[in-house]
Amino acid sequence: MKPMVSKDKRPVNLDIGSMQLPITAYVSISHRLSGVILFLASGLMVWALDTSLSSEEGFNTIKATLTHPITKVIVWTIASALSYHALSGLKHIVMDFGIGESMRGGIIGARLVIGLAVVTTIFWGVVLW
Image (tube, rainbow, N blue to C red):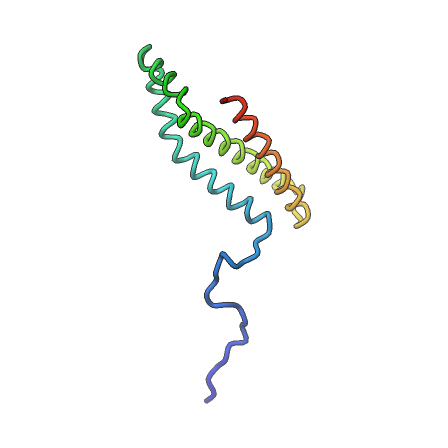
């Protein structure tokens, strides 16, 4: 009996760093990462809201904290992640309606999401500083 030899030529060990992913994959992965950032930041945002609503002293504490440069960077990161996540989510909703389901449409949508995300990130930077 002859041993069976597989005709499958796929690589056994995939090195993600050497793969050439399309822009749509990067947008999809970034959408998931922004969702994780928002999930982790939600505890911080709920704490800040609770503290600010607890008393006048708590409000003043949060107000003073928000003027610190490190806090501004954290708020900017959260706002940018929220903007990116919303834009990418809108792209997915548009695709659910059958618009831009082709590879070309996906690439155009991904470029739009990245471009608008850069604009909103700059906008949040201007608003905060």
